[in-house]
Picture 1: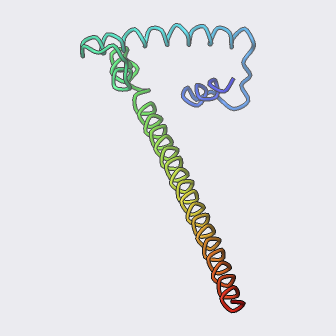
Picture 2: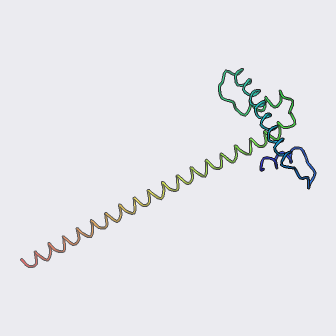
Length: 137
């Protein structure tokens, strides 16, 4: 379980500790209860702020109220890392869109040039035909 790796980092379990299926199940159930309790506490902070949507500051405040201050700093760091990652993804997406738009504009300009060149060639051919007809007359 990937989330369990994060938990073992937070509680500093010794290397080589194995966790049985039964213990994993118990941890999973305990984590679910904890999340529900934290959500309830965070919801109280949102309600005090007359909001229906929980935000990160509600969760951090709930952690402090639940006397889990030890986890506030790692949570803040994880939140900042998440925000940086999202910002990077957004910037990459915007850059990709700009590049695509630039490519599309370039292709349209090339197409327009090709059409102009085709028109110029047709005009030259018509002029040459007209000159030949004038010479024949």
